[in-house]
Length: 125
Image (tube, rainbow, N blue to C red; front, side, top):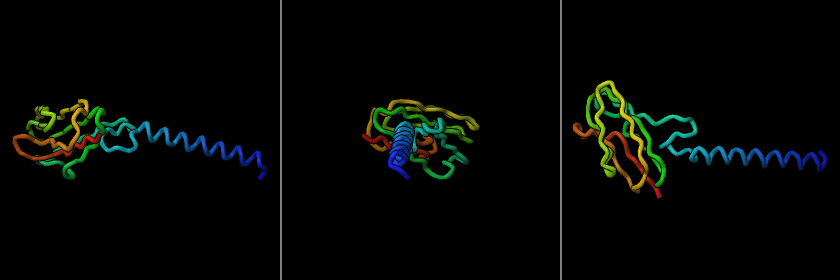
Protein backbone atom coordinates (compact mmCIF):
# COMPACT_ATOMS: atom_id res chain seq x y z
CA UNK A 1 0.00 0.00 0.00
CA UNK A 2 1.28 3.42 -0.80
CA UNK A 3 1.13 6.38 1.58
CA UNK A 4 -1.80 8.03 -0.23
CA UNK A 5 -3.95 4.89 0.12
CA UNK A 6 -3.10 4.63 3.82
CA UNK A 7 -4.14 8.28 4.37
CA UNK A 8 -7.43 7.76 2.52
CA UNK A 9 -8.23 4.62 4.53
CA UNK A 10 -7.31 6.37 7.78
CA UNK A 11 -9.59 9.29 6.85
CA UNK A 12 -12.47 6.94 6.13
CA UNK A 13 -11.88 5.25 9.50
CA UNK A 14 -11.99 8.58 11.32
CA UNK A 15 -15.26 9.51 9.58
CA UNK A 16 -16.82 6.14 10.48
CA UNK A 17 -15.83 6.51 14.14
CA UNK A 18 -17.29 10.03 14.21
CA UNK A 19 -20.58 8.82 12.71
CA UNK A 20 -20.86 5.97 15.23
CA UNK A 21 -20.16 8.34 18.14
CA UNK A 22 -22.76 10.79 16.86
CA UNK A 23 -25.37 8.04 16.64
CA UNK A 24 -24.59 6.81 20.17
CA UNK A 25 -24.72 10.31 21.63
CA UNK A 26 -27.96 11.16 19.82
CA UNK A 27 -29.59 7.98 21.15
CA UNK A 28 -28.78 8.88 24.74
CA UNK A 29 -25.95 6.38 25.04
CA UNK A 30 -28.28 3.44 25.46
CA UNK A 31 -30.16 4.72 28.52
CA UNK A 32 -32.96 2.34 29.36
CA UNK A 33 -35.49 5.05 29.98
CA UNK A 34 -36.34 6.76 26.75
CA UNK A 35 -35.52 4.18 24.07
CA UNK A 36 -35.15 7.18 21.76
CA UNK A 37 -32.96 5.30 19.29
CA UNK A 38 -35.84 2.99 18.42
CA UNK A 39 -38.52 5.66 18.84
CA UNK A 40 -40.45 3.48 21.26
CA UNK A 41 -41.79 4.37 24.67
CA UNK A 42 -41.06 1.89 27.49
CA UNK A 43 -44.23 -0.02 28.35
CA UNK A 44 -44.68 -1.76 31.68
CA UNK A 45 -47.07 -4.68 31.34
CA UNK A 46 -49.11 -5.60 34.41
CA UNK A 47 -50.39 -9.19 34.53
CA UNK A 48 -52.41 -10.46 37.46
CA UNK A 49 -51.79 -7.20 39.30
CA UNK A 50 -47.97 -7.55 39.12
CA UNK A 51 -45.36 -6.22 36.70
CA UNK A 52 -44.56 -8.89 34.09
CA UNK A 53 -40.87 -9.71 34.41
CA UNK A 54 -40.55 -7.88 37.72
CA UNK A 55 -40.10 -4.25 38.69
CA UNK A 56 -38.80 -2.26 35.71
CA UNK A 57 -35.96 0.23 36.23
CA UNK A 58 -36.14 3.36 34.09
CA UNK A 59 -33.20 5.73 34.15
CA UNK A 60 -33.11 9.36 33.06
CA UNK A 61 -30.97 12.44 33.52
CA UNK A 62 -32.29 15.56 35.22
CA UNK A 63 -33.81 17.72 32.51
CA UNK A 64 -34.82 14.76 30.31
CA UNK A 65 -38.42 14.04 29.41
CA UNK A 66 -39.65 11.01 31.36
CA UNK A 67 -42.00 9.00 29.19
CA UNK A 68 -43.52 5.56 29.78
CA UNK A 69 -46.75 3.60 29.47
CA UNK A 70 -48.47 1.15 31.78
CA UNK A 71 -50.64 -1.54 30.20
CA UNK A 72 -52.67 -3.42 32.80
CA UNK A 73 -55.02 -6.36 33.04
CA UNK A 74 -56.44 -4.96 36.32
CA UNK A 75 -58.04 -1.64 37.20
CA UNK A 76 -56.05 0.54 39.61
CA UNK A 77 -54.41 3.90 40.02
CA UNK A 78 -50.81 4.26 38.86
CA UNK A 79 -49.00 6.59 41.28
CA UNK A 80 -45.54 8.03 40.57
CA UNK A 81 -44.14 8.86 44.01
CA UNK A 82 -41.98 11.94 44.47
CA UNK A 83 -43.55 13.60 41.45
CA UNK A 84 -46.99 12.85 42.96
CA UNK A 85 -48.61 11.99 39.64
CA UNK A 86 -51.69 9.75 39.51
CA UNK A 87 -53.59 8.18 36.62
CA UNK A 88 -56.33 5.58 36.64
CA UNK A 89 -55.86 2.57 34.39
CA UNK A 90 -58.80 0.33 33.50
CA UNK A 91 -58.51 -3.45 33.20
CA UNK A 92 -57.29 -4.09 29.66
CA UNK A 93 -56.28 -0.45 29.31
CA UNK A 94 -53.12 1.61 29.01
CA UNK A 95 -52.10 4.95 30.53
CA UNK A 96 -49.22 7.10 29.43
CA UNK A 97 -47.00 9.38 31.50
CA UNK A 98 -44.82 12.16 30.07
CA UNK A 99 -43.26 14.78 32.34
CA UNK A 100 -39.93 16.57 32.83
CA UNK A 101 -37.32 15.03 35.11
CA UNK A 102 -37.06 17.95 37.53
CA UNK A 103 -36.29 15.98 40.71
CA UNK A 104 -33.13 13.90 41.21
CA UNK A 105 -33.30 10.65 43.08
CA UNK A 106 -34.90 7.22 43.06
CA UNK A 107 -38.69 7.07 42.98
CA UNK A 108 -41.20 4.29 42.70
CA UNK A 109 -44.36 3.99 40.67
CA UNK A 110 -46.93 1.60 41.98
CA UNK A 111 -50.42 0.28 41.58
CA UNK A 112 -51.73 2.35 44.44
CA UNK A 113 -54.58 0.28 45.87
CA UNK A 114 -52.59 -2.96 45.53
CA UNK A 115 -49.42 -1.36 46.96
CA UNK A 116 -47.56 -3.15 44.15
CA UNK A 117 -44.39 -1.44 42.89
CA UNK A 118 -44.06 -1.66 39.10
CA UNK A 119 -41.29 0.85 38.33
CA UNK A 120 -38.09 2.08 39.92
CA UNK A 121 -37.52 5.51 38.39
CA UNK A 122 -33.96 6.85 38.64
CA UNK A 123 -33.22 10.48 37.83
CA UNK A 124 -29.49 11.21 37.81
CA UNK A 125 -27.78 14.61 37.88
